[in-house]
Image (cartoon, rainbow over the protein chains, first blue to last red):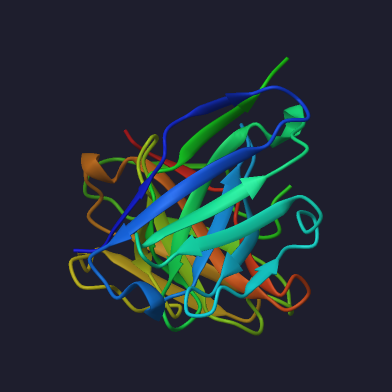
Length: 118
Length: 110
């Protein structure tokens, strides 16, 4: 069965960077794009970008373009999302979400809490 | 403020029907299909409906979706206590060139 297992909670200081991982299993890794989405406390979900695991090409949302880098490691079937220049507003739960081949997300990770605090 | 608008809460007694609305615009719901998800705190969101009204295998037929113009709806009939969760909608958006989401609706089973 498809599983997306994310790394554990992180606490970072303002200005630092954080890297969240998402290990995929139960399907052919290169067959599905992976998206990253976040949810700040009391807010709705916000799309951050996506990566094509076949070639590693990425598309980032404009609001995150300057600070986010998405990568993948095909040898371990793992996706990574690194966000730099953290501010308190980046405190959120970060999710990876697999795109089905029709634009919607059919499987999600369990979420990773990132807290930015001095 | 989420791009897609949902009511913050909805409630009904067991066995009743509850409907959740999702309002968007021509650049998202008006042009693309809608999906719906069930989300319990601390867990992975679960796909309930895709392509407006299609159910993945394993999702009970108590859950149904519809779309008209720039709005969509999720209906849960024969409400059960296990349906108490947050539900959110999603659609691709041409302006963002990415998906947009509703703010979520907390369903309470009275």
